[in-house]
Image 1: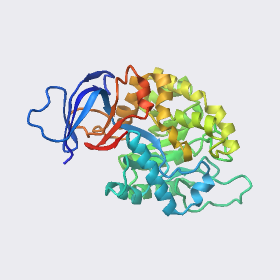
Image 2: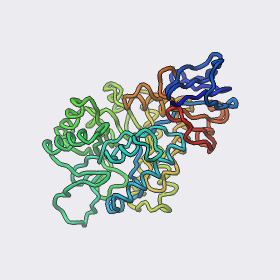
Image 3: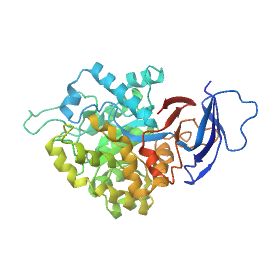
Image 4: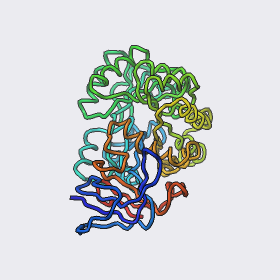
Length: 401
């Protein structure tokens, strides 16, 4: 039983964006009460909040556990034993930063999920899509232009090249057989991929509809890597629910997303970190050049989405050693949205995206995933990306630094 009492603390309400008084009482890993007098007969663990702020555990909706390198060839070449150990370290560090849940889009498998569920490694709650789906020559195709042609048979740890309606239906069904939370497709070009321009839509309408149809009948949804207005409209118009990145969107595209109840998951940290650190950490020159095209536009996309009424989540999409910038992603989104809206995105909105109403809130009945910060986070937003925090997962303290 994970019981806990957090005293002398202010509680961030991820619905109103305001602070209210504690304490927070946790019983058996679930929030039992917020506010009021501490229980007189309680004799379990007590955490002194020291007038700090407790926020819901953060959710990174665009995380890559297997993203231990910044180039596709290295990602695909390492033995799976190495990949799993690298993933364990990336997940542990994310948890210590306060990300108590991650959605792994383009990665993950039943083995890693089982190890996490059995407590073999410290990790955020873990939802995965399995390898992302890419068309030949699309964002997920790692082959350079001079590589031999023909079918890229089989899949890697983060992407599988699959063409055609029937083949895509089989691939989607197999991912759900293997426990996938949702499906990831590549619906436009990307920064890291070697041969495709960023703007043109990828996959035909029939192919995307086959994927979204299979996901919908399974009670799930599709997330699409997509940058340009034409690619986003192509994806959302054919049933995609979650647009990843979306940097180049325009006002009509934002309006369409709002009309279709699609989510935007901006990943501002990825472009900022590639711009500042990409050369040092091995991001190829071709990728750094394409990054310039989308770097500043990400902020504008968030502003357009907010004005249109699109649900805005939070993601990071950090590969290789750039993962150290995960909390910087919060700072970048705060610069655009302010601290309350950013926290709302990284908690309650992301929880709605993944279909977990018991996460992203601090209220009776919610899972007790919490982060205690040493001060008033609304007055001092830098606390969000500072080093000092206590992380609670399911009522148990898992990091105290």
